[in-house]
Image (cartoon, rainbow, N blue to C red; front, top):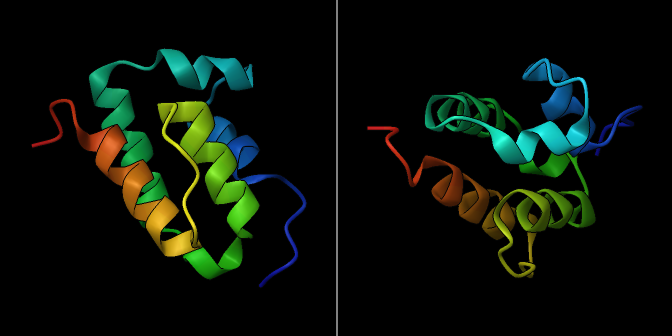
Length: 85
């Protein structure tokens, strides 16, 4: 696992140019697809399970996963649920 200076959610907010982390909860369907694309390019091993679960819970209100790969997969599924084609 690489040392990260920002949390996974903070990196996502910066990528989406959200001034506040809470803005990630109010994305348009298109922006949610862009965010899903951002997460899809990340290696699950680069972030601890706790950060994947934080993102999963914060962005989707889904329950915690037991491993990073599952949390990543669930996060993508939820983000792509609306109009990602």
